[in-house]
Length: 143
Image 1 (cartoon, helix red, strand yellow):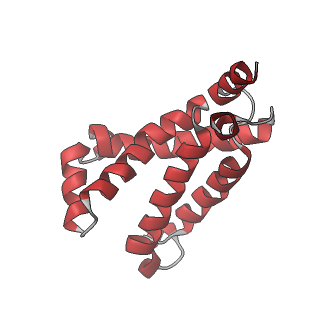
Image 2: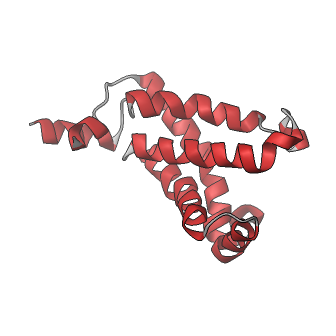
Image 3: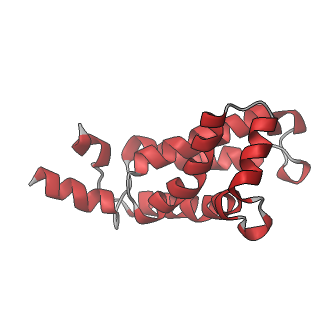
């Protein structure tokens, strides 16, 4: 089962999708965890999320997905899990915050989120691609 979670082929297209999603999401995660890039840091973000009525555990998972999931994507480590976490986080953000604002991102809409779905879904289905820790680990498991 663990092998299937990590197994991938050496498809450079998946690598491009993986690294792109990771690089785009990491600054958002860094805002939430570290307070970087004008973010509120962990306590401020948790206060904001729980103030919106999001349960503490789900808020924590969203922060973990954006920060550690993005790092995992860049490294190609547990790619399917990381991509799924980011997909779920962006889906929740779309429904809870951005949907009422319409499509366009400059109006607070969900346009950006659709792009993250398009990057995450192939990674969930196919895995990390080439140049990934998943591929290295899977080959060691396979023997």
